[in-house]
Length: 125
Image 1 (cartoon, rainbow, N blue to C red):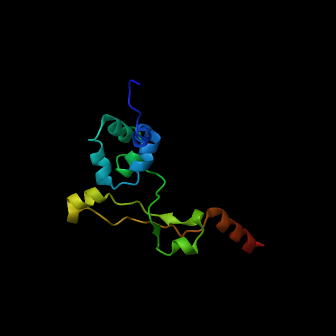
Image 2 (image 1 turned 135 degrees about the vertical axis):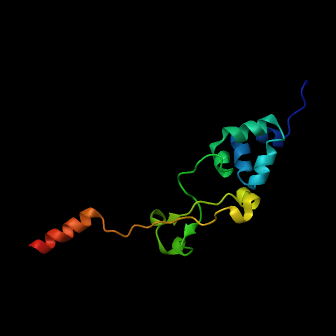
Image 3 (image 1 turned 90 degrees about the vertical axis):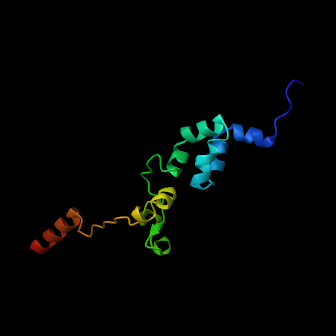
């Protein structure tokens, strides 16, 4: 036998998909610092859109942040829940008082044009 048998941990960490799933459970700072470990770790972080989103280096257009308002999770169906984007904790720590933590949330309560048109036709008769 020329090569010693690889440990189970080494085999798991060699697979980028499994390494990505493991790294997604780490805090932002640890994901950033783990890139110093090996080239493979760095390539995994650089090549993973999910890890890039966790580091706020790529946009996430789906807004899987916390539900707004807090009771929305129990009172509204999942398809109607509005979510807010997460704040970048590293930037908040670095810029403390200068980092905006308020997210503008605009709601449109105007009637849908088709509903208002139907209502108007009904009153004309």
